[in-house]
Length: 190
Ligand code: FNR
Image (cartoon, rainbow, N blue to C red):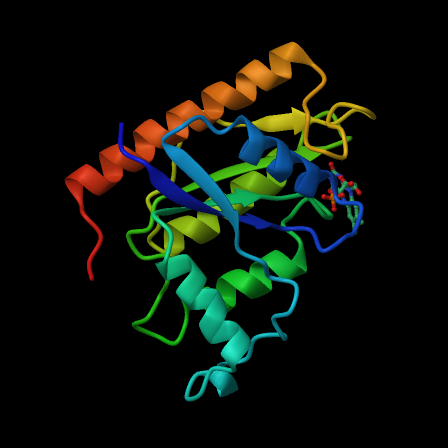
């Protein structure tokens, strides 16, 4: 089995983020063959194309971090039935300057959790549209809308519910297969 480095981006900047807990849980559940590393977005300024001629170091580092991984996993909350502004801002940075879109041909997956019953489904659908435009081959299935209940994931990233843990393990397994398929058909350039 090939080992893939997957960079995860947490869409929430909140200290007590439940999506960060979910990301922590995924990093712990990942089987051999997948290494999860965080790609932080919290220090990025607000994007403007005025920066395109000379990206600040923090944005260069962000783009390099994406270049350094085989795939990107978005772990996002739903804010007002969409993705958080911080996440959209990060995607805008990575997608530019024109012709240097970091997501082009980079496999991706989307997952998220919410205390709401539809578990970030609307935000994820919108994110899928954005990633489609950014030319990222995106895993269609499995979809993962995690309904968060207090105690579901401990501070250490332990999933307390066995069926949720199994589901997440299976999600990661499918993501591995998807990344392998994409990179086999279309190896990364450079
Ligand atoms: C929310 N929340 C929320 N939940 C949801 O399921 N659908 C939604 O549209 C919204 N909208 C929304 C807007 C804003 C501005 C906030 C702050 C929150 C509730 C949200 O799911 C909850 O706060 C989660 O804890 C957010 O995830 P993180 O940030 O803790 O990872």
